[in-house]
Image (cartoon, rainbow, N blue to C red; front, side, top):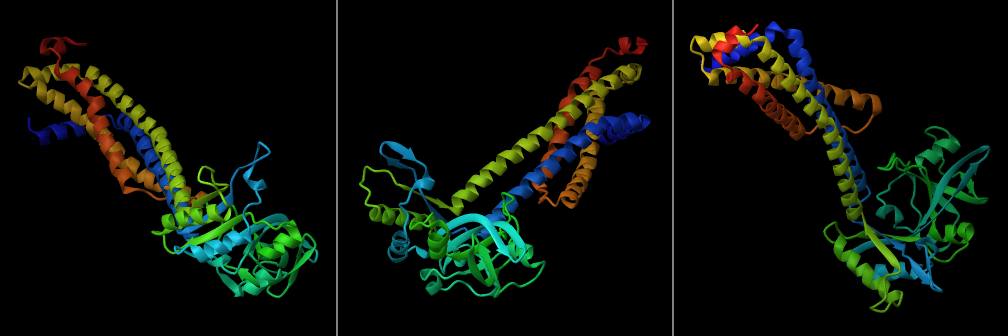
Length: 406
């Protein structure tokens, strides 16, 4: 019997038990749809994180105070007072691979305007701070160098702060707000950015001159971190090396002494986050893939039932000249058809469920064609793997015993 006839016989056999065939395929349908949806969620999250990190500037570096030993006691990084404006100036003048550097200080508290108040964070930076952070001013202007050096009581506000204090869509430029009883004149409104990868509202900020935050709010002379922009993404590693050398020099560290600061790059953050999302994507896919295994076991189970029900039919085919290989192929084709048809329906359901998840939750979803092809290939393999043993059992039946079977 040729392959075409075997396929027709297999299809007719499945049609005779439509409901049973559909229920058998259901495990494969759910498994494939789950794999596609889970991988789409994982891949979408990965792409979203990469896009958000890229929007912040892939050539950005930031220096933070490291652990220190004081009197034999290890101090936390936040207690270090080793980062100063002198470090920032040294980086600007001595690091060729750096195009911009700005000090950063920050404090949290209530901002007040009239009868309205809002809990937020104020960041202190220099004139280059917005450039490094890839922030734009949509109304008003940036902080000037003279204001940064002169402790001017001016600030820029994010869209969230503006909306909470002044109302939706209102331009507050020129108004005066108070942060910890210090008056700040709003000189600009920042471009809206939305939430970052960690769910933090990037528009819930106030930016003021670093000297103002240092002296009037924190009452300190050191800075909490240094924000740096390398000349290009390719030169980020070179910039990081140069910054380390300059800071070791300004901090007068000997060769055998460890750094009392830490340098991190956006590229490192991107690599770390990508690794995490890759692991989560694989985990989600593996969990969803278990249902494919369950679906395969369902196919094996129903094929055993089919072989048992059609034992006399098998004996009759063999008695009129049917070969064992024909019997094996017939049942194997039935198994593969169940798996493949289930896989095709599962792919359509996977696309549909991914679209529904995106519409209902606003999660970033990105369906990978590779996952679709992989799921379909796995379906075919499952059909062959789980259908082989029942088909082999059918082809190995003795014709006389099969004809006598009740």
